[in-house]
Image (tube, rainbow, N blue to C red):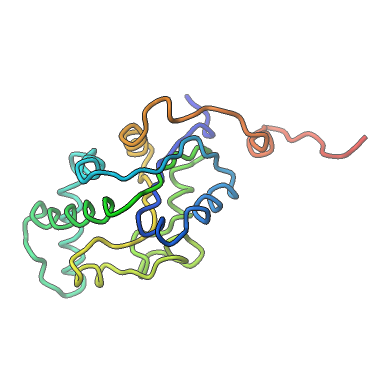
Length: 203
């Protein structure tokens, strides 16, 4: 079994985050908690690449459509369709337009519980309702599902973060070639992961 410190996750600074100059802020927040950046690149993703990203999980389209239908009903609204796949088509098209609108910065972060730690730092996916102040989305985004629904577009929430270890594995392989993710040591890993710290006192 691999050590906890070897867990990896994917983070994407979306076009709105790039345009607003938030790349450094995003990196800083992950670095200061102790995660290690092991892969990074800027690119313009094609709509096809983005669709492949969201459909790596064959169940995503139906699950996302069902979640959207429930969200409409919870707000007392009538969903645009009762078919989850029809509802998801609009969501997926919006995501393709959004994420292909400009450059994105893709990163692989490594460290103990990387997936959960990154998700916690990123905050909930809806800036208005589920992203707490102190998280990336809570501090740097003010969008809402309601506003994006009215405008018929994807919600602008600065970053993407993998939702599980298995999802992260698939997403990293989708965005990075093997040679683009680097294994190396950081000096501060000894402080974070050594079973015993020893003494920091001088002679």
